[in-house]
Picture 1 (cartoon, rainbow, N blue to C red):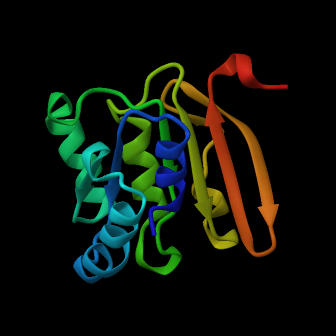
Picture 2 (tube, one colour):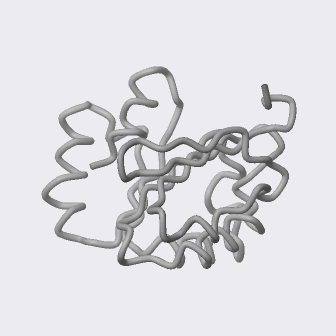
Length: 143
């Protein structure tokens, strides 16, 4: 739905990149949500699997405007390899020393969620019902 990025845009983020593999979702849900929030000029939609997006950013980081300040990873649990996503993120030029990353994951993927992610450390790991959320950020953010 793009809700996390759209919320960020409503709170002052300069731009957002949305990665969605399903073209139907892009056309009928995400695209409409972006329009409804009047966020089209600040939004870039990448209709592809997140793994391919991360591979593309590794090959051509300048094409994506450099590192991101905030990354939200909320893939469909059963359709992705968390091990591959986390490995690609770990090496990604999208991360810098002050990036914050939120990763939503199912219990069965717990072993794929590392304590460190590129230059970042896991600062929180929470459970919300059946959903687990890991939050990565700068080392100085650990309480």
